[in-house]
Length: 339
Image 1 (spheres, rainbow, N blue to C red):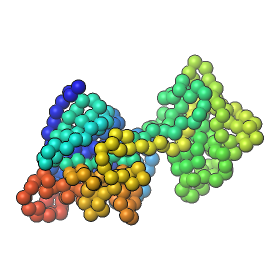
Image 2: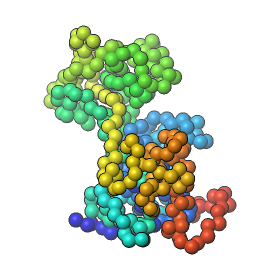
Image 3: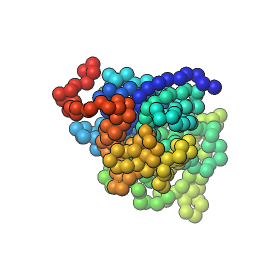
Image 4: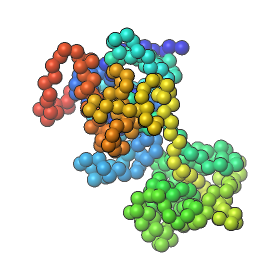
């Protein structure tokens, strides 16, 4: 059922940091944008997975938390009045003659545009869940797969399972607010940044983090849907019960392209293949930027995605404003509307 029909210059699929910057770049070239994202808020993985985690490789910011980065990008895009369609997944992409594309969502929204920028990060994502009986009854209160606000765990007994960056970083961070932090891992070696591992080990030496190694999750304890303990087993299947209010299993994300895989785009190992010069895909008028795009020498960095947003916007402009010469100006001389 069609609920609403819109017309714009460019549809941006994905409201993560790269998608938000694409709004700005399109706006600077006088192109109107509509943005679609399956999440209920802008920000993509920055907002959903690590809003309070510092990011260190954004130019001019020695460190900036994910949520603050998203807030600033949204402010930067705001003067161009983008229309956001949040909590909706793009399920259809059809060619509209020579004039562009029609985008449809699972909520019945229809958007006609001259061009489409796919900035969908890694596509649809969800947590890899541990195979524990009764897991569902604790999800959302006793068991969490991401941390939105670390203050939610203040004064609580927290078990963190995993050996990657998320497990180590949050163990270090939550040690400042939680009553007790326990890290469960099947081996003493971690797959996280060495400096972060060193900080965690230093906190363990101070008694602020308990290292539960080598163990892995084996079961859950609780009453009336309230988690009270986490069972772990060593390599000899000897079990131990950890008193806990919260379990944070950080076993990575299951990624898939979702409906994007059905749009007829050329794909390489689960990513959209693009021309490095223009970020153009195999379909005319559709460009891909950020983590979902691949080309020789691709670096999966937010700052590279920002550059790709600018390149894609410039490549698209002739489709939106055919025959109009572009007199390139730097923002320092051109300014920004409303600024």
